[in-house]
Image (cartoon, rainbow, N blue to C red; front, side):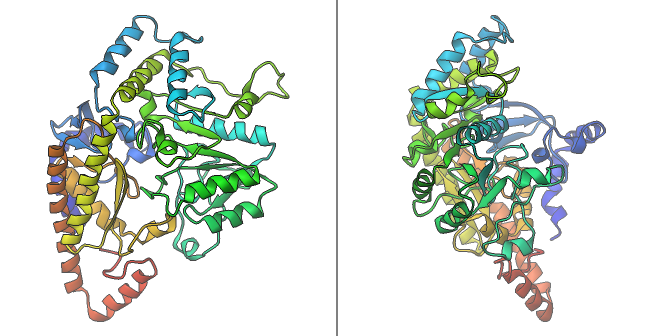
Length: 484
């Protein structure tokens, strides 16, 4: 069954989207405003969102597990948030000075995440991580930062390293040299980045010890989400906290994804760990562009103005603390603070959805590993018994994932971000009925992929099949050729 058959229904149902995308591609690279939004055969074009669904220009009602890249914990078009936005519009959309809203918002953030003694606001997760790293470097007086293989900390130059690797680099154990993600990143920037292996505390310790005199900050996604979803194993985060404290390295939790999702107090509440600094965004904006960073007083005080340009550590931005975003974010956080039962709801649905996906793949005898934490999860089509680190994800058969994903989307279920190695999100407005339907669609997708695998095995000549299996074994895929 050629891959085109998996996308046939999708193409049939999205003809107007195809026309609009071709029009957009004349003026926008890839026809999208962010690389991650592009996928083949073409992206669909949304009309509006409501609750747990996106309605597109072709009239399709799509069950959404992307949810604004994880931002929409309270669903599309939450009315309480919308009313606050309208109210603020009547008072001014751009004031450019501190407002009482700013103060109330930051107080709410600090109560939810007590490790942030002082806080500054920004407009995106990229800005939050960029400024937090600069602040930490200023505080420690050291130029290098450490980040994990596979971790995504936004689109800034320092963070865009080791998000992908070629097969030769994957096979070289202990080789953690910085690899820029794409072109345009200066070599001098790469020289200030130290790469460590997530979930390998011995390997992490060795890397840090080799660079102890130069590393001022270590940034980590508490749950590694740049590679899909990889949960911390064997108390990795607690050991990382001990290690960085011992070495005098500022520990930064990038909670742009996990903040206000795993718990009201984020991953640091969920795992009971206190970092030195924290970055937040996504859910914290209530669906509007809002992010920030904060931490211990003595660290954040390097941002105090009035020291003269030679001694200051700069943080600024025209839209920082934008009243519309802050009004939306404050309302979202107030709702979450008043409804702790939402976390029980999404975590229960997470077990139903992601546990169900694992059971269905197993029933179809389709090698797969479903990794999830709470309401975030991902499917890896792999023969590995467990996904423990970034390099394990390279064993996954990306073509199988894509065929399954586009089959489901053709049946109006969007299983998260439309790129291999990304993730799906559950919101407070999803229901058990939504999950049951999603599992039915997913099972049909698994069945179609399993059927294709069987046919290709039957067609493959014995000698060629053996060669392909040997080739695939190097990537951890031993049950079928990697071209399937």
